[in-house]
Picture (tube, helix red, strand yellow):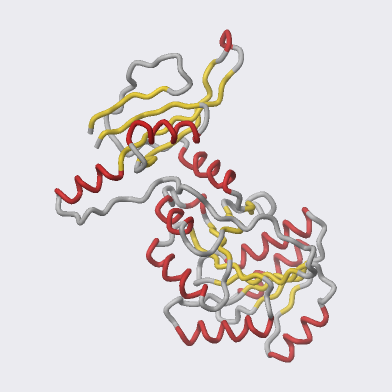
Length: 312
């Protein structure tokens, strides 16, 4: 595959140059940020360096090799659909987090509560419906005590109705649900009944960055069918190359709402915005070796963009 190493002042310019040289199917294989000396060596310039190749050429090569033309999706998806900031202008936000076990729903619920209680001075209540995982309620209760918000654990529909009435004046209610296998139709139906009773204003599907893209696709379809209308990606910092999954999500019918990348309760919950997602992707690539060998720099010129070609 023909590869190009391109330096540019920003990612947009680098991708534009890649498409000029390799066509519309140019894909980023590796990216990192650079800081180079500027005028008289005193003012430093922030640059971006990317290694790009052609998906079309890779498909043709894999067909020849008998691999049915499969290739990895682009490192950075073309566009992200994001929900933007939470809107409190229409009254109480009742936010439910749903998804399979082990993706970090309880931690997400606590991080959202911490962000909007301590960062935006909103009145927040936490709710746990997870009675299947040992210690789940105690974990959320510990978070609630640290943040300084009330926590509820309704055990029946009557208790749920009473809880909603008690917290009607809260700005926000965050509902943590039990993990559900996306292929378990009975469990999905039970979760749908619970959500119908609690009437969340928005339901966020939590997906781990290390999830298999095919499982991610099935989860989006399954949880979307019972009302999930947003996606939160967790554990981004634990996954070295979540690019394939990002590509699936970027093209899914559900928009991004938040991203988590770390254990800091306040600072590691990131509002999903297209520019911010691209920045995080680039920073995540810093220090990682490109997936190619023997890349060398060609002669450069004084233009904004610099490129060197490598034949693979």
